[in-house]
Length: 180
Image (cartoon, rainbow, N blue to C red; front, side, top):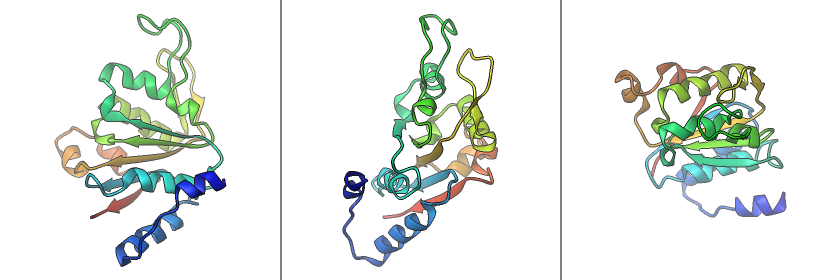
């Protein structure tokens, strides 16, 4: 734990900075998904790391993935895994990021870039704590704290049909706003 907490040592004395640290410290022990919203450069990933290391999951995996770096064809398999033969080239079972983060935290950066069908699967994870691998026939239980981040205006994207409004309005989801 010492190494992880050393990584999380932050210095600053401004009122805004101390307020952010206080809010993170209060949210960290609450075992609910978090959506971090803020402009580029506001420390969203640092906040996600701090939420993980101050939580009861600190000694379990923290897995990061940037949704913007994955094409629509691989994001589903990368997040949820796949079964052998589920698509051309799927020779064996593949563990997705949710499975690798079991017991810990999965940080999804650039959530707004995730395709709508993936957002639907994320909503299922949030609401029911389960998911299916690509090509799977049974649901897998999921004990992962989900932390997502975006710099996009999600209500505007939801209004345009480019982001799932029900994911944005999900009752277990706690929102955290970052500002410069």
